[in-house]
Image 1 (tube, rainbow, N blue to C red):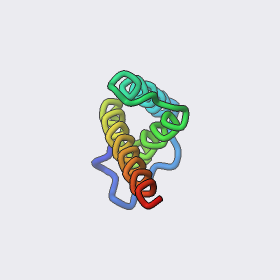
Image 2 (cartoon, rainbow, N blue to C red):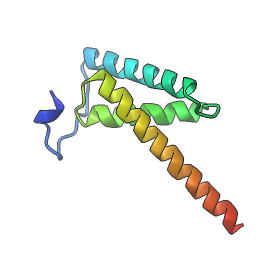
Image 3 (spheres, rainbow, N blue to C red):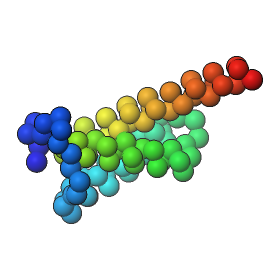
Image 4 (cartoon, one colour):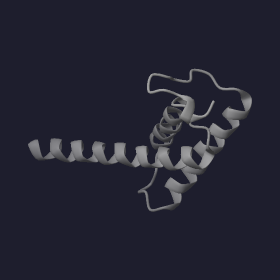
Length: 94
């Protein structure tokens, strides 16, 4: 199932063994990138968030390993930025 054949309402709920391997590789590769590109001390919860980001992309129908990795990293970084911004705002409020 390629992404181009999915509509905005489609959602993949299960994966065959070959797609699971692609997802697993994408999670591992994305984690390697996060750990080695200046992300401040990644934690276990960061890896979990990154895995969720990969799964979100896979559920949307994406099958390309490199696209999964890149989109998951972008999604992860965006969520971390939003979290940091909210934390900063809360600290200012006291």
